Length: 228
Image (cartoon, rainbow, N blue to C red; front, side, top):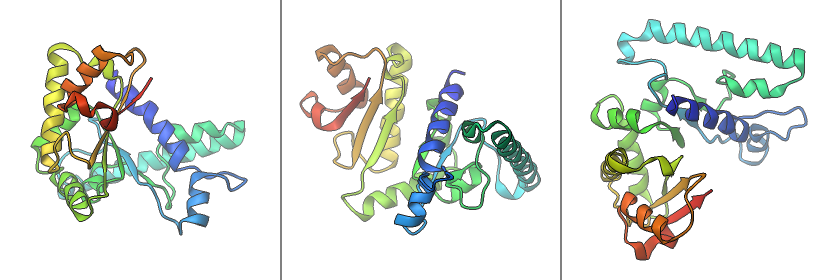
């Protein structure tokens, strides 16, 4: 907290937007089944709370137990949604249906990088230093190299909180991430999106953003999308 609380809120929104079935067939998965031959936009939350740590061969028993707990939670959510008529309850736990686009465990994301990965700067720092997560970055870099039209989107939530020494550390962390992916801040293959409730669109904010992300102030308008 508050990092994991923010991640949970984002996961609820992603489940609604990308992983929903509806009785009238207007859900995201219904549309993808009928219009995109069942394609999925895979997403996952990768934080300290994501099961399970360690290597897969040594954590099989723990992973099976976590899966059992997730299945139990999903069953309870479905039953509660049926009893109350409140379908919102389905989005507060990972969907465990066979056609789900949510990747709920670390090993799934390590083996196949999701289209959208939610994390925090603390966990990202750990991921960049460990062998377990190296394939996530390697696969993303390979995807970028396959086609110049492929663009990596880096989304920063609560941007106004990254000030001072802590903000400088995060700024350097993002530079390490981009370098790991074979990118520079001014590359056409990276797009920055930043959300903030208090960052105004003025010259001071533009100076801060340019310095934080390491790009020229002249490139501000083509590199940034600020969502207030």
